Image (cartoon, rainbow, N blue to C red; front, side, top):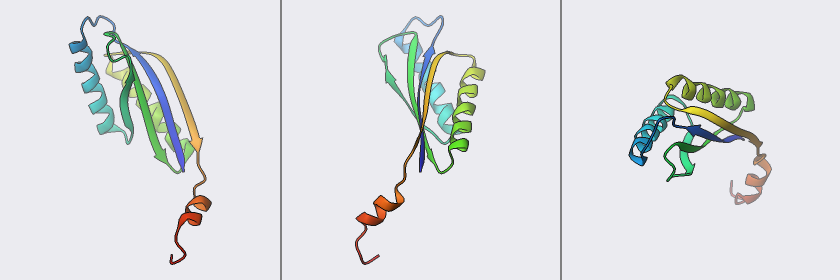
Length: 109
């Protein structure tokens, strides 16, 4: 199993209210979830008008596919032209669960 996780720092230039931020955030998150098979949520700075910290994750079997999907998601954010990407931190984590799971299964399986 492979997990891609990341944190994306976005800036909302010209935004002057939390209401405006929430509107943009809601639109952004809904479109990302519709277009990509990812989990996404605002993870910090909920009270700052011009900053959005998004946490994103995706689970799969192939690290290259996950990395490609996360890159496509970042390109999608840029193409929306409603926010500016300030910083991105992405990590691909490999888990070997087969042996661990088989040890936990009852002997009847």
